Image 1 (cartoon, rainbow, N blue to C red):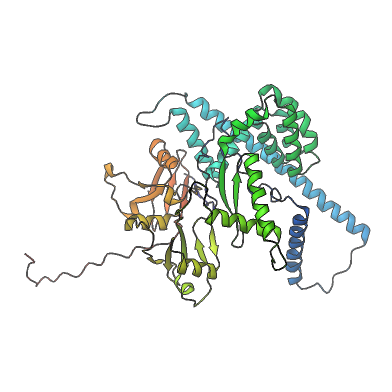
Image 2: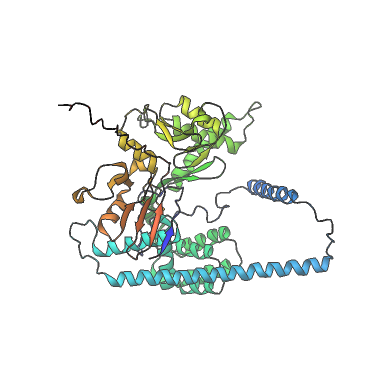
Length: 491
């Protein structure tokens, strides 16, 4: 038996992104982190970010004392030695691309084996999935746990691997010899979406020469243009097909910041951007210190948090969010950071403001030394049962490895089913999203609770993966008073 400790992924999994079999494109728009420049649409912004990175690196370098015996390197030697370093970097990058090729082969082989091992359409007694779907969902879950990635990402890698190995021979070969990176290969897979099989060869031949000399972001634009020229279907038909992928995603970033990604049809998205820009421009003036970019962000936030549609949709709706605040921070005794559910650490000032003024937030107080929850505030509009609130605070998300679906949107599961004697106690209950709840009951995955909210999942292959609770909560032992044997009987 092999044991691996799984990592929890901060960003929540997109609802509905539960595909994974070949041909299922759910979750393929999850490109966050592939290229940090993807959302930069202004060169001035790029320059600001680049200058910031250089300054950050220079500050780190200056922290190291200068070597008094250092001797300047002659220009010709400097050039040749740095060229050798660059050559090593390029060679390493080529090996990395080849390793991605090998990973695609291994994953595609596992997927092909799984597909051959079951027959689609054969129902399983009492199950909502047939045998094929059970097997494929189980494979995707296992890959996600093994690679310590969210299941949406695992489903995307399964699809990418199958497409590269079975349908994109030119891209597969270019990845193997290091001509292109895996980011380029991903772009090819993304851009062939809905292309008929007979068009794939011409598409590869048209775009791959550009991939070898173009950055991933530039290549994405090139591939999109080629796809538009070669696609046999009208853009209207394709738009209708893609409307089902509309989504909004929350993407945590560093230093108390986050992004809200809005995926919508181009006309609606452009209209929304234009409205935000018009309002932002109207706020500019001699006394306004915020930049246009900052104003756009503030305007969009105000519209989403305080705006109401013409038909009144959204009026009176207030979201409930957990913020965990150290007790001494709340009292102003120190500035230890708090924790915002679904994001992570936030600064003490923001935490105190939320805990003290926002009635729609559930406030949690933690012990200054142990971090154990001391109390849960009683101020949400609809107070849930104490045990349910305890579990929601403890778990934070679905407790399957890598799943980030919030606990409030998940189901409470008995680790040991009640029909087998399982009790309705904190150490036999945990939150599982709908999909992982089904996975637990309809596949070979086994779950046990170890101690203090730690869960151990054993996959059908015998690998063990652990998940830790989002909030350390220790239940005090039950105090049983001593028995006075000389006391009279109570009845």
